Length: 373
Image 1: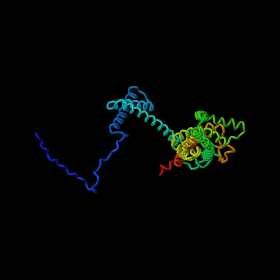
Image 2: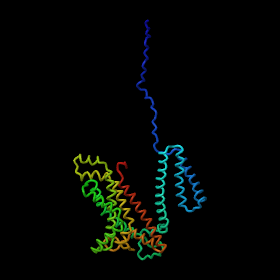
Image 3: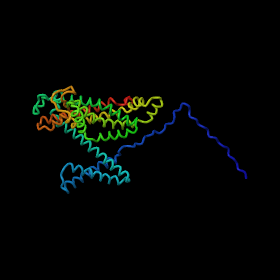
Image 4: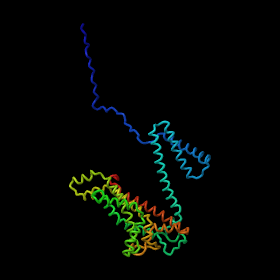
């Protein structure tokens, strides 16, 4: 029995014209990795409201407790419990643990932020009666009594002394701190561990020991007078470990490939450090300087030992006593006179403002040029 073969019909091949536009491809929409959905927001707000109602019922009605601090702490703890219970109704255990950990982290950050904000706001409120007088910034306290009105006297001499003392301390401590960090990260050797141990130990020591060191070594033994330069030496001792430790962490973050590329091009180790490593870590080194300046700007204990308070302008750090903002604040807030206390709080607010301005200016000058473009 033979089979009959049917003729094969070839389908014509349709080719699109050359000038035809390409077929549109579906638009790719990136998946959102971060973000809070509407259900999560509702659960968060509902947990806060339920915890607040339960806290009011248990804390004030059933237990008859009082106090805003205790009420807030109980509200926070109840919020974590309620939020974990609501999350467990829909999600598995890892997500519940993640939500609780997130609440704890955000709660800690909120506590720290409120503490800092309350301190700054309280300082500015207490010092506002003195801050809105122009003479407070430009005059000194020569011939002005603590009970004199706020329209007389100011902190100009203390501001000048602070800038002079901090400037000398930066000149002394910044090269030494960065050189120590370069030695620990780039040179190494047997002594690097010893140097790192000494730096860490100096970071943990009380700052009053720096004042005692300068006082015993220079004032007592070498008969050095108590002046602004002695204060700068004590501040430099406190700044060196801060700058060295922060700069070491920054230099270790610099990729090793940059060092290897510089050495492969024939540069010496010193040239690689000076032209590659240090410019790359410039912003981090600026942060180390800011930390050191912020640490030294608020020091009072070393100043009480190696410096004496004065009420007049003194531009010479090598002769006579030189006042500073920390000393002015210390004697101001301890005074029984209300007006002098307000001057002390005003000086504290001014010191906070100066540190913030220096921080912003240093970060602006040390910003990355590539990112700024």
